[in-house]
Amino acid sequence: MQIKKKLHYLISIMTCLILLTGCGGQKAEIAMITDLGTINDGSFNQGTYSGVERYAGETGRSFTYYQPEDASEEAYVKSIKKAIKNDAKIIVLPGEIFEEAVYDVQKAYPKVNFVLIDGVPHDADYKDNTIGTNTRAVVFADEQAGFLAGYAAVRDGYTALGFLGGNPQDPVIRYGYGFVQGADYAAIELGVPVRINYCYGMTFLESEDMKNLAGSWYDQGTQIIFACGGAMNRSVMKAAEEKGGRVIGVDVDQSRDSETVVTSAMKELGNAAYQGLKDYYDGNFNGGNVITMNAANNGVGLPIDTSRFVNFTEGDYNAIYSQLVDEKLVPYADTNYGNTFDLTLINTTVTYLELN
Image (cartoon, rainbow, N blue to C red; front, side, top):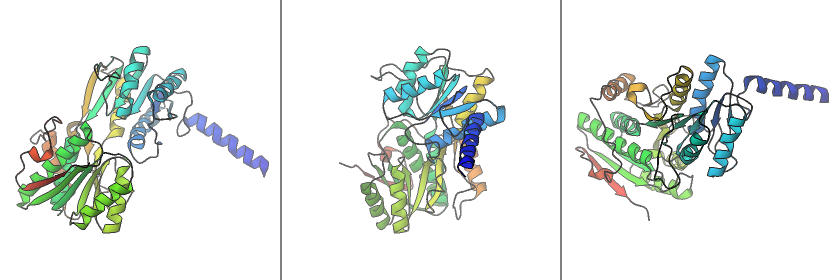
């Protein structure tokens, strides 16, 4: 029995080394650094890793991932250096937490290429945001994803909506701007009035306070809340489960997290990682630039196959999506504009709540 256990263990280790996936930290030419979550977090890490895994699977190139020891620039840089020591030629990094780390390492390791997803490199003082020729910075048209979510919600029959964001960072603000514009566009088409409660929760963490806030909105008649705050979304989902409300997820398809999730405003993180790797190996890396993932290049969208719509159809989705692709619809996205109630809205009233 003991021999069998040892044999099984050795086979598992050998399989892990051969596949170079799911075990983390082996020598590989493609590497991904996670944030503090895991590659199965159902969010940024998993979405990004799926693109790395897909490209490597199609091409047979070795790949692995590294998880930093803690949430510090030192830990991020340490993981990047470890990947380079283990022969990484190109490193994928998901999220703005890596912006400063990439700014530093891109100069120190000019022969290594970096794909920074949903962020732009900058120094510690935010005074310089030089993007090295060995770095691709990828950002998303969050306002388009938010627009689709707001539009779909109203076309599906919801007229009392909520937007609960995390900290008011640019991507979160763009999500919110798009959401209210999409809701208003659908409200105009249908000729119905729509109201939206709007708040930045000032946290990306799960908390009882956020659950209570979302619960109070449901109690007051809000039917569906666009939860745009990382782990904070779990608080909204719990409130929805208790109060009979509905939720719109964010960044990735969150339909598996709760039966209350109707749809999700997605960044196609996997596509961004996949395309960055493909362009690198095809000789089309185009470093030193910011690449925007939007509807035109399948960078944002809603997960129609897993969405729980009642009235909103795939045909409706394709019709509104094509208008974003053709730029017949261009949602406002300047985050310096002000609060969403300053936007020109016709059939929608936004009640803005500012937390102390």
